[in-house]
Image (cartoon, rainbow, N blue to C red):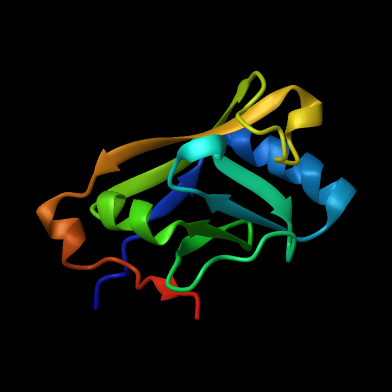
Length: 127
């Protein structure tokens, strides 16, 4: 049996920031909203600091931290692999934990191949 294809990855730069945030805050979580005021950049919170809405999708974990996607955004991006990255700058809203470090998380997307689509890891939905 083939191993399941992950929907999520992180760059080394993103992992370095996550490790720094773990030291300060402990368990983390990510949430990527569907737009409006906070844009569509992923936000990082202390675990439990944000509550996903009903039917939002948890597409995977990064260093054991859940990565949630707004239910409507997931419908649009469900055929794409997400790679979490970080860049210098101030993200929308400024509520994400990396903001005081002068960083902002961002996502790079690529479409899954037809072969990958047949063997994706399952998505967890909030209730």
